[in-house]
Structures are given as C-alpha cells and as structure tokens.
Amino acid sequence: MSYKKSLPFYHTAAWKKVRALALTRDGGMCQDCMDRLRAGYGIHPRRAEMVHHIIPVKERPDLALEMSNLRSLCHECHEREHPEKHRREQPETPSRHRMRVIKV
Image (cartoon, rainbow, N blue to C red; front, top):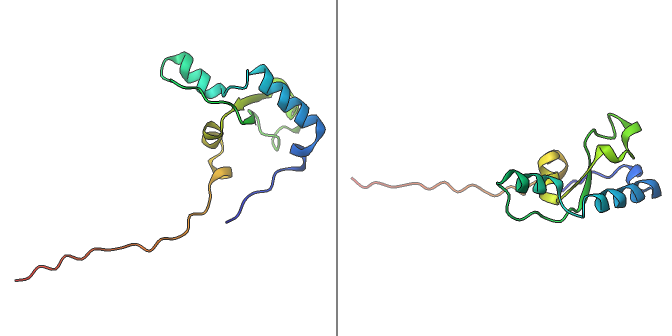
C-alpha cells in the first residue's frame, strides 16, 4: 500500500493555527454537508475533520493561509474533492468464474 506524504507546510505552527481558526469559524461542521442540509437534501451533517484548500497550495501557495481559501470538510466530503489522495490499492482478489455444465 502506498500513501502520499503530506507537505512539510502542514506541520507548521502557522498552518495549525489557521486550521484551528477555520474549524472554529465553521463551527466544527463539514461545510459541504451543511450546504446539502440548507439545500434541503441533506439530513445529518458530519463533524469536520479536515480543512480543505479551495485553490490548492501547489497552485497558489500565497493563498495557503488565507481564511477565504479554506473550507472545513468531513473525511467523506474531502474524499470527493480529492479521490486521488484517498484511493488505496485494493489487494487483487482472484475472480471466480462459474461454469455451468449442461448434460445432454
């Protein structure tokens, strides 16, 4: 199994402080879940576990600590934003082919 390592940026005191501020601003709730609830098709919003960069750090490092570029998300909603980051290699399972024998 291969996991991507996080950027050193995510271990800095500055990021940890801004991350905590974003979670507080959003009431600790996933903003995608809350949007669905407000739109009338969500039922149970989940607690935010992650703070997502709307414009990725690699594209705009100058916005890495901007509150307006941050959105609190639960794990499931963050996976929807970044499926490539959360994909795990599945062990190959042998496929079973059934053969039907017809006696004549």
